[in-house]
Image (cartoon, rainbow, N blue to C red):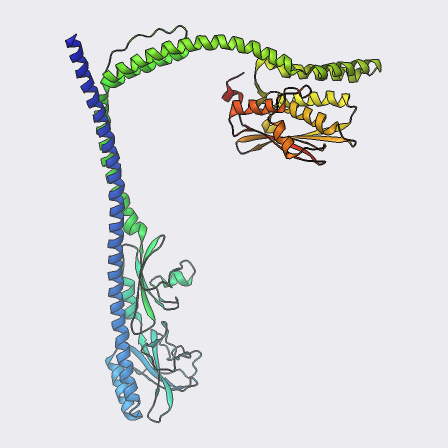
Amino acid sequence: MKKTKNKRNIIKKISLSEMLIGIVVVIVLVLTLMFFFTFVNIYKNTTEESVVTSSEQAVLQVKNTVENYTSDMEVLMKMIQKNISQGEKDTDTYLNNLIGIRQDIVAITTYDENGKLLKAWSDQKRLKENILKNLSFNQNISKENSKMLNITKPHVESLFVDYYPWVVTISQQMKNAKNETIQVALDIQFSQIANYIDEVGIGQHGYCYIADNKGNIIYHPQQQLIYSGLKEEQYNYLKDGSHVEKDAIYSVQSLDNCEWKIIGVCYIDEMITNKVNHIMKTLFVIFLVVVLFTVIIIRLFSKLFSNPAKELANAMREFEKDTNHFEFKMIEGTAEITSLTESFEHMVIQIKELVEKVRQEEITLRKTELKALQAQINPHFLYNTLDAIAWLCEEERYKDAVEMVNSLAKLFRISISRGHELITIEKEVQHAKSYLKIQNFRYKNQFTYSFDIDEECLGYLCNKITLQPIIENSIYHGIDRMVDEGKINIGIHQKEDKIIFTIEDNGVGMTMEQCEEILHQDASDRVGIGIKNVNDRIKIYFGEQYGLTIQSELDEGTRVTISMPKITEKDYGEK
């Protein structure tokens, strides 16, 4: 006996260790996944910060270069203004020498306040006699002194014969030696700064461009695509700093001495997404290796537990297939399996006893159900119906009598329904139509009725004899007391996962107290199986959230609403 106990203790320790190993393996997998997603997230954020920093540095470098370029323009403009104010003779000499020294200066021009060209200095270029359009004259120049340069967008110089360089113009108003207000314009070649902008790259496809404070593009390395409408920049209005948009990162730096700003564009797919995808692939391979290793460990350490568990599961399936003839045999295994086996054996014994008890109760229930079905046929209704059939025969209205007999036969057949509590809505509608047809004969067309049914509802199941008690109540307590013609409207429709039945009549109606009372009173002599019975059966079969509600107004009529779930024969298990 002691040896047996020792063996069981060893098995118990082994089984617990297996469970611990399984738990550890699961934890390792979970932690690996957490590490995977955490690392990817950190890597993505770090990469994004690195890309933003790199983009900002590139844009700052471009800003400094362009700012040096514009500062040099500003110095030149101040020198030109100083010499123009000293007198025409000294100015000519100085400006011609300046243009000769500075190869990037295309022309220096002066204009009166109306834009008339007063004088032009160039490197021996011949001035056009008729200038169609002079882009060097700035009509919108600020008359107030400002620290910002009045600098135009790049344009083609149009003042000289057979000479069309690409320039930008710096304009400034001043007083000349004669104290006249003039505008001085300095045209400087833009190709140098354009070439520099073209060579700047952020990543493989990123770039920089120049825009003004209003979002207008000054220069773009893909200028031709912009002009042709094949490309559009949507974020020219962004403030200084870095901005992460849906597909790109925009870094913006404004120049201090003019209304230009440098905008750098780098693509997220290229700079971040591709790198993240690469690291994710690497980590995914590592994760697969971990999973494979984990699966091997689980398979090695689970045999002691899984094999007996499979035997127990097979025994349970055999018991499920044939409860009556099942004979259980003890399964050897771990302490946990042994405990489960003993519990299962005890459960088998109890279930067999319960099955036998249920079988006996079912026989009793069937007998009771048969009596209840027989009691559902109101004897007054049956007597009056047969009496009406006899009267029709006496009146030689044989066709009507046959139709009434057929309706009565359908009514009885569906009422019985081979002992099934649930029948299809289609059969329930047939039952209601048969009942209405009989009552219409009996009441000599004192009322009319109509059906509004969603055809898709007909295949679902409902409690049998659901509509007839409601219709019977409408006839006896609503329409029978009326002088005018009565109307009964029956509707069946779907609403989400429910089937909604509605029975409306234009009868005398009820008070709220009567509506509440009728839901709680048992069947009366006249009201068949009773509305309360209908409501109770629905709630017992489907739950408290389903059932019957009544809305009524005196002298207006009554509306009964019934809700049931969408149940098919497959769900119910009856055929």
